[in-house]
Length: 270
Length: 270
Image (cartoon, rainbow over all chains, first blue to last red):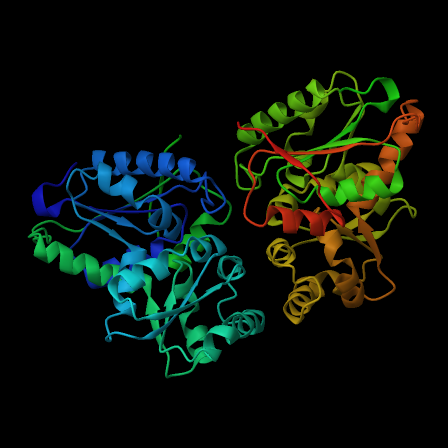
């Protein structure tokens, strides 16, 4: 059963389960839109693989989603956005492409030039320097302070979202960034939105938290409208989840990210 | 340059870097023995993969090490030991095979029957129930209390070996096991020996900590002697490290596990 025209789904993809935070934001921001989510759970994590391998995997996912007749692609994986965005746009056959790094960089520079911007992410994302480059492309006068937070992903996957261990870890990681008196902090990993209440406590009220799941959904809304591709509402929005493996605790962790029941999950065998 | 007879190397393998704790224990326990270490760093972690995939990967590594003319195989990976040991023994062409689960189970039951034994490990190892099965095969009257500790591996890889966050995490994970008044605690993951000083503080002096890296080295010494395969000392012991990818911070993390300089690391491209 395939939808046509404006009621085709949005394709969202990630190396694993984290991109479901983007799906959640899309569901809330754009309730008429259908979504196909692809999580490459058999080959996660991408961050430790070579660029050539990440490009190959990315191409395979993009081609798969194009066969599902998606009308837009959202790269909900910081690693793919950092090292394989050209692979996505080259294969996208002209449909709009959005990625979490672009979304975060745009939001971080939206309050005017010369801001002091903190960026947190996994070691791979931070070492790629992709956020700093994209922020400087939009505002060459911005000051960017980056900090890798390797324990945040395992803490989120453990479900310790409001736990003394997580609080202590956040205080330690964020100390150097806060010392630079940043005005905003980009949550540069799709796992981090689940830590937002705790991070809000740690950074205080004066720092603007930039949630790249929310900003990606906002950017998707704008681009769909500009391209005349918004869903009409004539068909009920549908949600599909496709993974390459169903790992331990996938349902539990997935539903925590999505904020609701996952329903059916399909597995493809690559 | 290949050694012959008793001076052939011992083959040690793991899905990643953790098995270097076993190499370290072997170097100290058996200084005359040469070692070839294989870490499948491009495909780590194994714990989230299917049994068929783990068996395939295991077979590939065993065949590679046999081509290096090893005289003994040590499975320094709890996941492979739990689900693919038969694959190893079936391909080993009669050379002795040791694995970390056997070594840990033997040490845990060495103080006589009916013990109260705690086992900690990754979620995959604990859910496989492999330690409990191997302990009960040696002592059907033993009581086994298991606890998954998913944050210990990321904490070790972050280098927070003596950190308040790690201490708080250990206190939380170990509370239910300690409440059972265990006499010994098996460190059922090759990363955990690095946490031994901190775990010693948390569990107190009365609980015996069983380090499966040390016990595997002890078992290797016994089996080599029994099989008449101990190195003669006529050739200088050599150490080789082979990985399938050189991930971020490999050198730093590897040397932390090994307790000394890694020297050269070779990469094979699979």
